[in-house]
Image 1 (cartoon, rainbow, N blue to C red):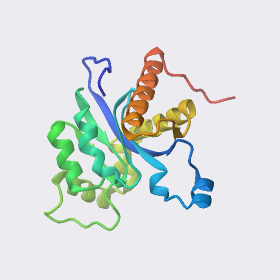
Image 2 (cartoon, one colour):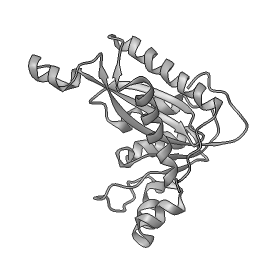
Image 3 (cartoon, one colour):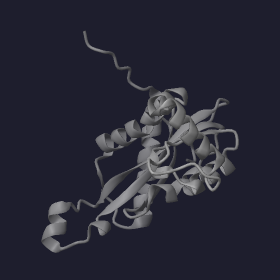
Image 4 (cartoon, rainbow, N blue to C red):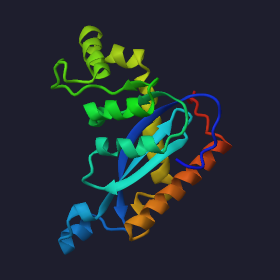
Length: 202
């Protein structure tokens, strides 16, 4: 994402997506006016660092699959990346190839889909995850590869919706793209001022 203040260290990036309503249309509006749901939602894709900074953002229609936004998300990231993590929706060979082309030194941590079996057609890093999970189990694999860092992307989604709501206000796609870019820039500004510290109550 352009305008992010850079430093000399590397970041771990997590990809994720969430839905945003288009200018207030909701399920009741769809039912009453027979509006197709695909017209009333956009999908916001984010690339979030382990420092809670949003490094990339892409807005698409609702039917765009998560993995299809990978190239556009990677294109916006100028930082040194040590790890890229995502959920099973991104477990595709082309995602591994795209991430590896942009960040050759980064670990790619994506849990394989349950129905997959090892074969030479899969990306080598994808195959390595299959073998390790079969040998050690899913939980051990997650702990070994620090998969828990992916929760930062989920936190970013919650921060976005709690701050700006779960709907877009602009009507045209081009303006909606600007709207989410501005919103993510504001969140990054908040992050630069300091994240809240949470403590367990006693």
